[in-house]
Image 1 (cartoon, rainbow, N blue to C red):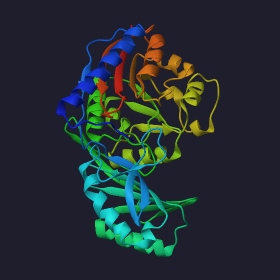
Image 2: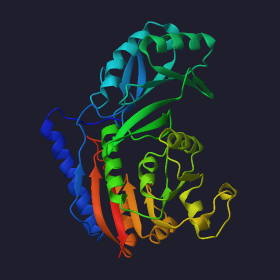
Image 3: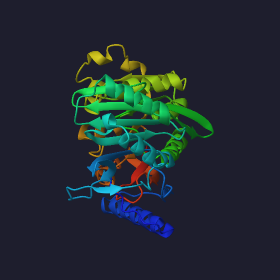
Image 4: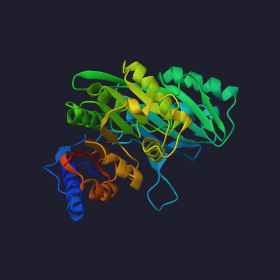
Length: 364
């Protein structure tokens, strides 16, 4: 995390336009025809809901610090302009409290913030020392003083004082969705752009029918919104923490037509092709589903060849990508059978080279 931001408001728009041009060029070079892009920008500052900082000890005081690429020695920071207002407001207060308490400051080497638009805060304090009851007592006092949740971590140790999660609220098409976001698990870092992604995805699939299969569902971020457009949803996710969180979120949002299978995309492809039976699917009748649509949100590596083939068997494909290069490679194959009907880009990470995108494809 070392954003090269610029205080000039025009600089943000220029860097976004550069990323959009690069996206278009990448698709053109791959031979992928796309319609006119819809572009979803971010606030230039105050957009990031989570942050990780090094703690640098100098002259008896702990400081927030970050590392520049290629440099071993970190540099001290006093604020974090791209971070949420709540993170910036808490940074001096929690640092002052830590520096005033030797039990909390000694051998503290990292601090992580997870915040929400609902003003909930979870702070993880990470140490190079074992944590005992005395530390727990002092950390509990700090949590009460600042009205935050705290977790302590050290090697082979995790102390949760109250909860290891926060509850986020996002508005999509006038409806409020609640999400449990668990410490150390993946969540979308830019809440406002996440809302734009959810709204776009929902709009793409609002006239769907039959059933949806979703790969890489995570904590159910998209699933909770998209489920309303289908009779049934079968979602897969390999992480046990994410599966538990997704189940919690479906209950929280009263979504009752989703079944989760703890499988990788490769395993699910094997199961759907009847190449292999899985005990984790023992209670799932695959023959009872009439899949018309598949939704994928893969990691940066994109879709493997087996999953690539699987998606082309569906009438509609909604693909959310965090890596335009692997998206372009996948689309080379997918567009042999499907046509791109809608494309959007989402600037989840201003001041970086990264761009998120969404593509809706229909069978030719």
